[in-house]
Length: 334
Image 1 (cartoon, one colour):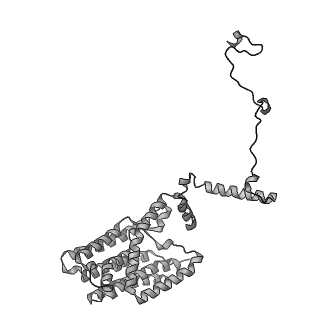
Image 2 (cartoon, one colour; image 1 turned 180 degrees about the vertical axis):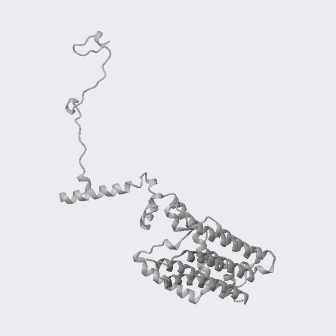
Image 3 (cartoon, rainbow, N blue to C red; image 1 turned 180 degrees about the horizontal axis):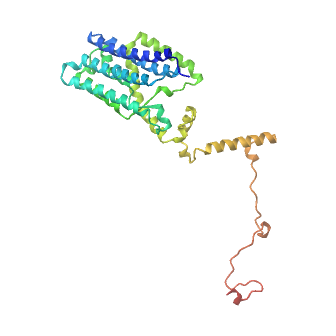
């Protein structure tokens, strides 16, 4: 059943709010209020994380919404941060505009590649847990890290023009790179971790209200530190197909065991071993036996040590040279 047209407007309205928030960051930078510029880009990232989830929840996804989301991301996280950085530090020399253009172009290329990857069907199952390169909201916030440090701590080496230029180009390279980064869309929270997670969310909200810029700086630094871990996780999953479709608990067990292949086992043997254990358990229940399982196994047959005829075998021996059977002559043996 198609969604109500009124319901379809809600995700697109949130996308438009993200677009307006990103453009407002430029206006705040032109008036010298850089803290509001950073807050506007962060608010655009929040809106961008909500519109897609709400659209899927309400079954209100549409082709127009997908195109609008890409255009909004290009402006809010590509054009707006580039202009903010240019107004803040890069407008004082001629190469600054080139640096701003490089970042904006790389953001558009990253979004174009993301749209094309959505149509590919030959990707491995574990690839849905990762982004290819740094996503657009994270890139738009990472490029503002020197500005956030300048507003939180003060002017320092992180505010130098050459360092800001190098940092902007480096973040642009992360956008179009093939480096895997973790995606929060596939994270599943177990039931026993819901309460601690809610407490952590409350602590983060309190930190954002009390120290907004400091919390944002810490979050961006933690995001940078997670990239090597994401690369290692991606590489481990690519080498362990048996862990692609199993729950996180079984993945941790495979990782602790060093991998099923290192143990000399094939993945299907786990099911066979489980079936064997269940069969032994049923045998114990049917027999009313409470002792160790090893005693249920049949003892190996014991063959007699002497007498080949007793076990139904013919004795084949090596005759000595010159020895004949009864009734056999030397001529017959020849």
